[in-house]
Amino acid sequence: FYQGQQRVATMKGLVRVIRRQEEARYDLPLSVSQLLQPRRFYVTLYVLRALALMPADVSTSDPYLIVSLGDEKLGSRDEHISNVTDADFYRRFELQTWLPGSSELHIDVFDYDSIGGDDHIGRTTIDVEERAFNREWLALDPKPVESRVLRNSFSKAPQGTLQCWVDVHPHDAPKTKPPLWDITPPPQQHWELR
Image (cartoon, rainbow, N blue to C red; front, side, top):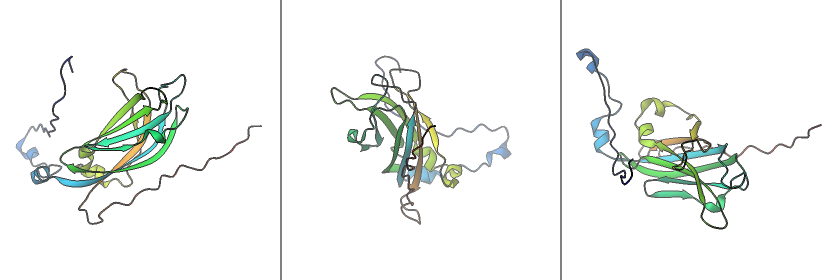
């Protein structure tokens, strides 16, 4: 955006370019009635770890997560991890939303500071609407772990990588709420170097 401009809306669309009339018989990924009638969805975000976080303190950070979708916000600065650049979060966040509607899932990583304000390390955004209305993505089970780049407004350079995945399920699906995956961190192993 140019100085003084701000984002006021998001427009999504499906554009198809066809050469012949017979190619026009393509099935749309969803019906128009699905777009006009919002449905409630469960959104479950699994965050495994953050890698190569940009140090916000001298050489490390004290990262914590804040996750937001629409008006819902989860996470806490009390759950920060001290003095790391690679953080093992192993956290699950459960949210709900109406689609079409608020679809941008923001995952922010902050650096905890006991004095003064916390520093914003970076953000990644996942459009859950693109997942909920994509037949191929819905057919994937389990969902793939994604490596998502963290960015912030102060630098064009990546601020680290977040390993995570997201499940999106209709609230009115036959199974109701989807099963939750256990993402307990792997047990620590002690090694001796000889």
